[in-house]
Length: 446
Image 1 (cartoon, rainbow, N blue to C red):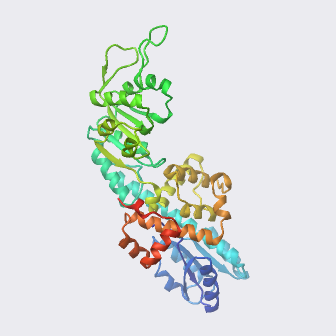
Image 2: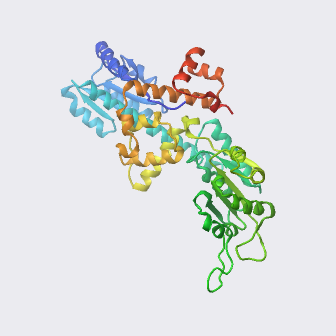
Image 3: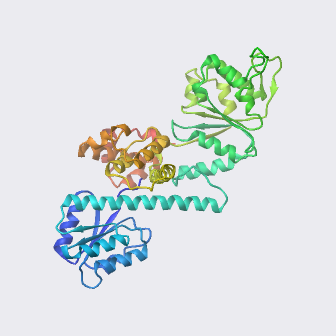
């Protein structure tokens, strides 16, 4: 599952005000808990509290300003919103200068109230996401390893562990995964963790090499110029290090034959050369499609698949690890803020809705681009947010429901019993929703 909107603690000694304002928030889908006294609300707060505190200023016992100071002692980053009468505005401004998130002067419009609370919730979520990211990095630094393979879902924990185990093994590796999941990142981590780390890491995008120049680019050429100088190919340039063949499924049949010889003999024969040259290279290949299917279709050599399929790693798409999205977004937002020399900012309503509901077909690469655009507050059609903003409420609810079901199925690897327990719905309802949303449960079984 993924992280959604947090909770609001609403404190006011007036019962009618508590009922009216809590109803306003609940009607917009915001979770709210009300209290008649500030001290009761304090018991619900700790440094990990995911939410916002809204409090009236004038209350018996502990008033709103004293309550604000007590909350600051727990965690100064918890957004605190004060509700003030006309005579209390000066005090509210002082509280703002001391770190309060905002204040609302009575009487205030319901939409203004909701918007202020939402901004506070978004700000708090961003803070918690960044804290989780820092804690993760500090933990890895403590053991001497910093991995950019961020994520706390079981599939990502397993992938990091496997990369650590495989990195120093001098064997070829096949990495599978959709576009944008981070296959080259995994390859670079394997290189960085190996004894070859001080030698070259040469990346070749097989899908971007035109056939007419591919052989020369990959294997080199002797005496290609008038002066008789030779061109060193990418394969030979990786000698002693790692050769990363991205999109190997796009390699032409002729190149597949040449690559098979390199893998079997560890020799490269440049164009025009009479004798092959021995090379010491580790090959890491990546494919965005299932190579067994490519073999069955006659698009990929079966013997080449057997040679590169010594160790096989799969990088999961974002839709299979939705709980990692906030952590990744926080990381990319911090990266964008540093690059742009800006302070990290809270997400707008449109951006947060997009973050939670979008299917992320471009995976981590798309999420990173979205984070950079969010830092610039670009919420127009250019970043693909306009359709979400124009969707009707039923459309949004339908999309949200489908996203939740897909997230649960991914988390439990398509096990129906586990999914029913997590969703808390009857079996018939579950299958009705699968049909309505065109969700293929077999796609989640591993």
